[in-house]
Image (cartoon, rainbow over all chains, first blue to last red; front, top):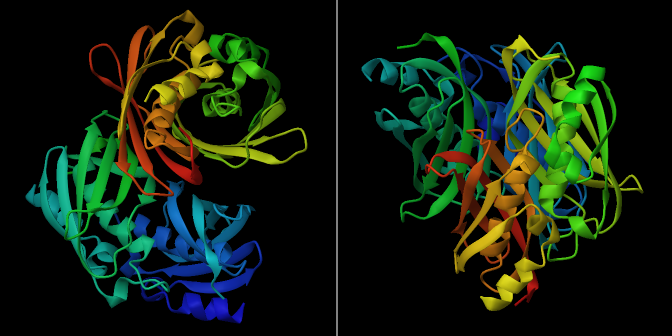
Length: 131
Length: 131
Length: 131
Length: 131
């Protein structure tokens, strides 16, 4: 897990967006990000790309928690509630631990525990071990 | 269109990610972003959230090009080719100009014109005019 | 609920595919379908369209359980495990009961309770009441 | 191509839904289905699962046109216009011919050439040859 933390700490884009990895264990990961004025879009709410970045780091943490390098083939994100400030937490669960193409669901919630967005993503695992 | 440009210029997150709006006209928009070390993930390639942010701005430009405020209900992004440096261009086309729930496709290409990612997104239009 | 059952009983395509609505209450619905040789594709496993039809009926049941006509704007389905025979059960949960654009998740499982597919779908509610 | 046609002719579910393969060549496939009362849902329009079945056969045709067995990992379908009768045509294009995880877009149009739905799907190719 320590290797995994270091690996994710090397995600420059997520780090600059303020994403922090809170917890990671096999099949589960939690990350968070505080929404500040820097994260807002022209409509005054958190940009979809910022929420995606948070969710993507949580996906990467859980998808790689098995120790084999896993890439995202793609993702589907649904925006349910806009957020203008405060912490957003992302909890990623590996719903299906397929050896090659795992499936992960990430739920984003605001400080009141309300759902902000849901991201589902299929990964693609290479053969070699990563951590 | 000038109002629309100003509106999008107010997207703090996209601006900080280096996204630039290049062109916008009814039904079409183009934006670009130069991938730098700040955009990379732990794997050394452009983070999915950075590509999503670029695509999202292009979506917003085209979806709002009709002058009515349009939000993204969600998006589906497929990553086809990784990029480690150089310009990525996003071209957004409003495939279906539904008055309430338009459908937009955004194609991201690298400097060689190769497809990097495809994002499709459904918007939701409120009743009032935005620009 | 009786009106809703009748409404769904009018789904000719789902009925011909052998889909049965098992249970429906506000925010939840369950449907099932027995996979027979008629449901198989050229690869000898249940066709994706058959699984989609089952999931779609469960979506329709839960999305309309509030009594207002709700259409599907689109759906994302991920196939996790192939099925060649036996019952597949679909459980639909309205994750987000937005008045206009609700969000539903449907999980399909086989007779052993193993996940077969997951469908997520955003609906679009018209103003008038349906049942 | 003849082998491929035979392969697809073995899709019992699509055949029963009235789906016909019209054309197939490397990177492109066309299929069609006539919407009859048997295809309608309770709302009196073509069921989403019927449209998905049509699109899925076109996907399978193009994804397997290279001669290597390709499964669908999942798909995203957006419904743009409802259809109550007449022919719906599906044109599938392999947008990205990745050796392992190709990406296909399928557009469904009605008899007037109007877009009915768009399906995008990622496939997963096994190592062995199929045709």
